[in-house]
Amino acid sequence: MELTDIIVKFILVFIIFAISLVIAMYSTYAERKIAAFFQDRIGPNRAGPWGILQPLADGGKMFLKEEIIPTNASAFLFIAGPSLAIMTACIGSAVIPWGQKLTIGSHVIDLQVADINVGVLYIFGVVSLGVYGVMIGGWASNNKYSLLGAIRAASQNISYEISMGLSIIALLMVTGTLSLRQIAEQQHSWHWNILYQPLGFLLFIICAFAETNRTPFDLPECETELVGGYHTEYSSMKLGFYLFSEYINMFISSAVMATLYWGGYNYPGMDWVLAHTGPAIGPLIGTAVLFAKIFLFIFFFMWVRWTIPRFRYDQLMDLGWKILIPLAIANIVITGIVITLIK
Amino acid sequence: MEPLSNKRKVIEQKPLNFLERAYLPAIVQGLAITMKHFFRKPVTISYPEEKREFSENFRGMHSLKRDEDGRERCTACGLCALSCPAEAITMIAAERKPGEENLYREEKYAAVYEINMLRCIFCGLCEEACPKEAIYLDGDIVPADYLRKDLIYGKDKLVEAPLNQKISFIPLPNSF
Ligand code: SF4
Ligand code: SF4
Image (tube, rainbow over all chains, first blue to last red):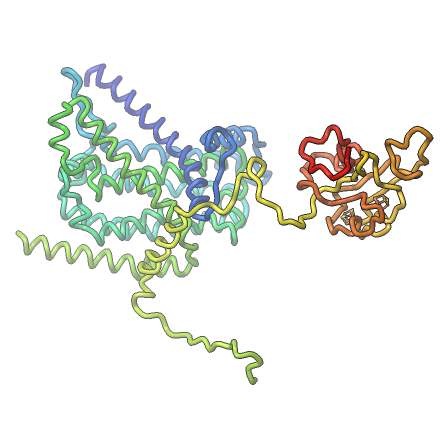
């Protein structure tokens, strides 16, 4: 690898990191604004025009809050929890292809940090690591509510990871590859995987809601029963990290869903656009399309949050084990039969 | 029991059918409902900049009135304080000196007149009790403040501005 390549990769990593954080920041604002619109309110509008400086004000507030580590908490783990949560949230974006290869002059820039051939597995690994942040935090707080929240998070994530994995298997049978780049390339123009795997996508998005602990599956931080759930004892920026990691997770899982099922950076008529704008601009339009899809998904996450009440815990487990897993297996079987019949 | 009104409705609890148990149709319905609200005009307003119209008999901050010649009407009879259920009003009476006839209408006036806005329940009984038509609750909402002592309003805040300083004033007949 040449030096310029390494520098380009570093810049790309930096940009993606910055974008993730900015999107997470503005998701908090969007969440409040969208919640307000859904509830016929105006929403935050004091900090800056239309309240767009609200996230900065919130961040500043978080930093100025008192840093509390409970006496009976294990200090190291207490700090490790949120750090791990935000770290796993941030590294998920490494394998997502943000666009087609960009050609500037003689340079070919790959808009993907790491094109590993087991991209899907990597995402799964990161997602299952994510629960450790929550678990360690809840355990280290030495508080019954935190612990209950952490246990809920762990069992919920494990249950839904199974059906998520099974729904992915059906997709992999269609694509025949684990590399996210190849999966994205296969969906050229309008051949999006959602057309072949509608049920798989439905299962995947339900599991994505559960994995990111979003309503209706936000039992780990269920305020009505568990005070604040796993982050009851957290204050200051450590709490901020947990909230941030939730929003980054939402962003990353939106990106994954867009890439796996909704064509990633592909859009109908992309060849024509590419031919008319050249290889330096064209791929960036694809990136913009991908981001538009991601924002739609983030909006959908919020839309669902302000529509559906939270599940009861036994309902959650029923849904996960008795409905989603059989459905996912049925989906695999049907996909298999259809593939054999077509061949 | 015999129904006392004919409003009683027998509610049947049917077991959920398949579609209802499948969650998804209900969720889609819910999403449609919230989406309708998304585009609806907000029912809230940005309060201090925008204000709702008050009803005609809205009871807001008190004002101590002046008569046609700009003299304070209050004669410190204390009826308002007596009628006040929240005991929010206190006053100290004083006698009008010669030469102050243009300031106070009666021979006795309130040298100090204080209403504790934290106690006041805006019932309007003071207004009703006043024999001199000196106090009306025709002001705005009492603004918030940081200190309790700042919410005890004295004459400086309660007494109407003198006639010649009035900005929007409906001129009474024979007032000048
Ligand atoms: S409005 Fe009622 S509570 Fe307030 S000062 Fe008058 S009498 Fe007292
Ligand atoms: S406001 Fe009216 S009731 Fe109260 S002391 Fe003055 S004159 Fe009497």
